[in-house]
Image 1 (tube, protein in one colour):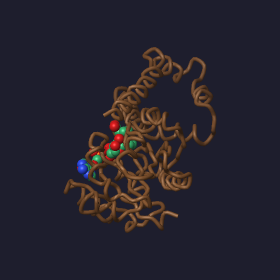
Image 2 (spheres, helix red, strand yellow):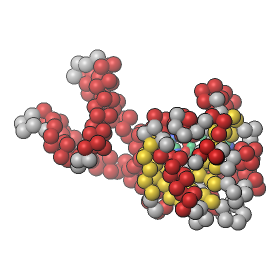
Image 3 (cartoon, protein in one colour):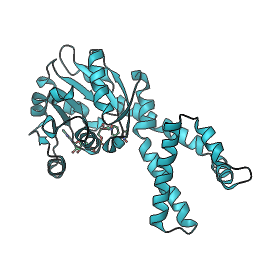
Length: 270
Ligand SMILES: NC(=O)C1=CN([C@@H]2O[C@H](COP(=O)(O)OP(=O)(O)OC[C@H]3O[C@@H](n4cnc5c(N)ncnc54)[C@H](O)[C@@H]3O)[C@@H](O)[C@H]2O)C=CC1
Ligand SMILES: O=C(O)[C@@H]1CCC=N1
């Protein structure tokens, strides 16, 4: 399917890079991927690392690609959409990965019935393990939605959701890798505090998080059941869990998701 398409990224930053790397190792050859990016340093990096073509500017990219991914910061979306709106035609599909920005607020920049699909991916796309949530705009077809779903399935797992839930997904999975990296760092710190060498503590922390996540995914068991299997009566794990509960880990994580979702809503208001 996607081999018939040319995909262009407006903004070649962190998230675009994760998607480009993931797409290259999956469904798309380098000559089907483009980016437009003002930073000379980033342009060189993208050419050298991935062999993709860099457009001279955003309008040139819009003209050359039939799938255009908006991967700039939400704060400059108005400026960029005003710039490229004139080069849009209805045979092009726009994918927005911008936090907070609604499909309706993108559609209003274009004439006619612009086809917009909104996706909230995350950076593990780089290793083919993205968690992406997506929804379609007013004029995108079911076929458009399925095409984008297939594209993002090539870099991880996809959930179709209602647009009203996109800020929640941004708070959970879009931003979530940052929480888990912090958890990994903190677990390793705990190991170092207990006398482990830093590199060993880091390796044990990473593999523990990978292993626990795979247990949940591959056994299909509820996390509480898997946790109970670790906690021996009167043992070590329940002593650790008791400390996590005392310091409110669950509420802290829930509030982190809500704070991030609230920020996503704020970004959409600008
Ligand atoms: N970083 C993440 O984990 C995730 C980011 N997103 C969304 O992806 C988008 C991009 O985020 P990041 O990649 O993290 O940001 P970033 O700052 O790494 O990338 C943005 C890129 O846009 C370029 N740029 C600036 N002005 C431009 C212009 N006028 N035209 C074209 N390119 C321009 C910048 O030079 C930069 O390389 C944001 O809207 C964010 O909400 C979504 C999911 C996860
Ligand atoms: O921090 C941000 O705004 C972006 C969106 C989701 C993850 N990172």
